[in-house]
Length: 220
Image (cartoon, rainbow, N blue to C red; front, top):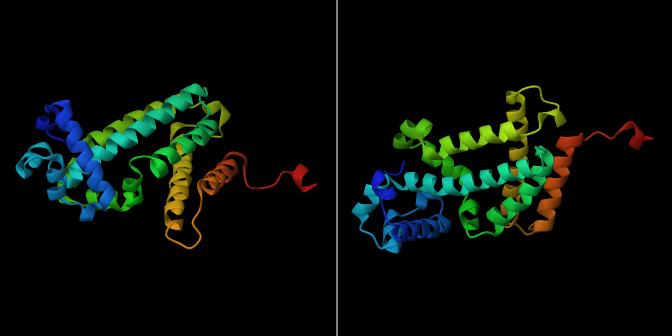
């Protein structure tokens, strides 16, 4: 996790380092990221980098953690605004996620296969020791707990928090798959557009909310 020396930096220097991280993480997947490029862009000595972070994985998780935590906080706000309606909140959240992940200033970071980058970082010997205490995961757990407490479970066919978490996991799997499919399609001869992406997620979310089987009335 970031060292105390990083948090003691003035805001201008922190911002410069984060901009350099954004540029390099946008340029390449994590295994190909260059610390030399980051320090050159941030205009700091290479030795200073290691006074702030253990390695590039450490910086990656800190930077990505700020993005993910901001997104989770947005979802929490939506759930509170909709009085705990999970499905309405997720529908609105998807529009926000599209703006952030596909169209936002960090789009190339997400496009550079975040899932693979996660796996690479988690497999590092240094990171494996710190995972349970890493601020990124702790903040995620705290926000997820608050989200669970804010969801109106009376509207759902769940009986406990374990089932609620499983339902949320399914919805997020659909969200990640839908966006991942969009990125993949951009490399093909038939790229999806954003309207296709939103329609696909809306359809699948409706299946989860209402079932894929036709009602007796629909069947005639």
